[in-house]
Length: 146
Ligand code: RB5
Image 1 (tube, rainbow, N blue to C red):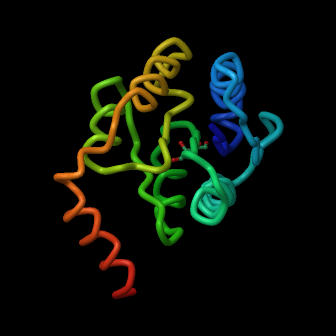
Image 2: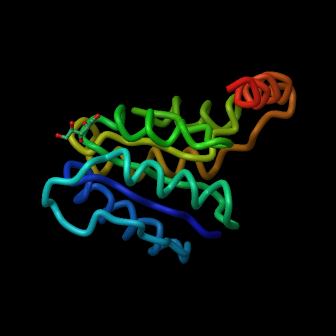
């Protein structure tokens, strides 16, 4: 399994913790920055992770900013990205089962490290339910209308 991860400064520490958690499960993690808590702009990192996930063989992406909101909005501007801002294990599970989310967005200032690990695990354990494919197709078609 291969995961792309990125954050801004406010998500940096959370990103580092999520990276460790994934690596402890022998998952390959490609870190697209930021590399410190020095102030940066979250859209750059949402874009990087979004582009990686839609063009290279990643299983999914993780983006982190202070709330997860800004970086999820940015990632969702990349064609083919379905970034879900999740805040507990139930939304993480549903993001996979119903929305086939390919990017998880987490708030570094709104979620604890312990909860983030459970959130990631709940997403990875879940399976997309094919009965929802029709709605994913509608979302994909919306991208063509741009
Ligand atoms: C940065 O201060 C903060 O605005 C950013 O990390 C994020 O929360 C935006 O949505």
